[in-house]
Image 1: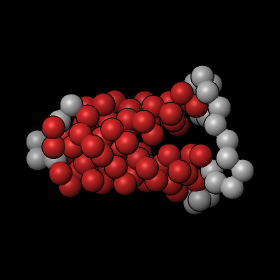
Image 2: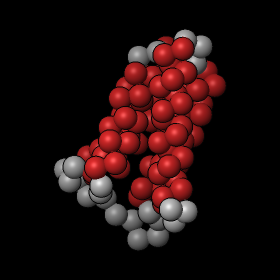
Image 3: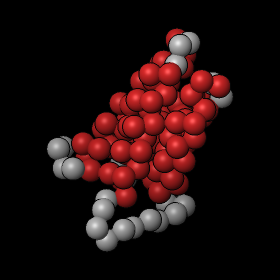
Length: 102
């Protein structure tokens, strides 16, 4: 992975952890933490996941996107809204990269 992908994965992890500490967004943020944590571990070569039929990056991006949208809709504090926005944008970028849009 490139350094930009690593930075995006780290940004998603930080945003997801921040969302996890907000009581209103705890459940979707837990899914986002797992997805972004796996993405960071894969980016730095700690683990290697592969599935024959699906792109793991696409699946993790979809989980992050959906969890980010749910957290964004439930958030009321400005900081939680910002963290939700980061998670949504990174998830959307990962989904677009997974389907080959760029």
